Amino acid sequence: MNKYTIRYYYGSYSGIREVYADDEETAIAKMWRILRKNMTLPMAYKSEEIIDVEYNAD
Image (cartoon, rainbow, N blue to C red; front, side, top):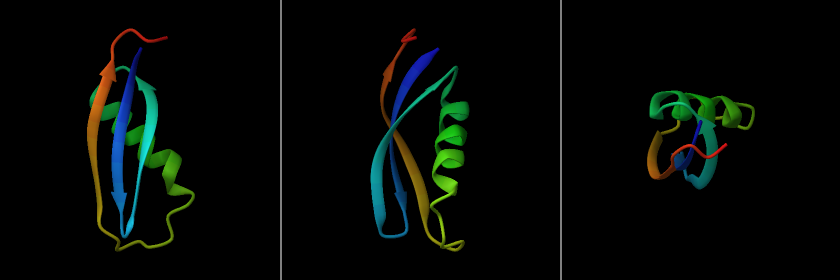
């Protein structure tokens, strides 16, 4: 499993999350699932950027 460090933007908010996943697509989906409980603006701008990957980081 790899450790992905992802910078995200949601409306006027931004932050960085670390997520463990097998690939980039799964890591991004997992990060948005984690953040979804705090999302209250359905039309807000969303984007993400993978800023670091640590391979085989169990």
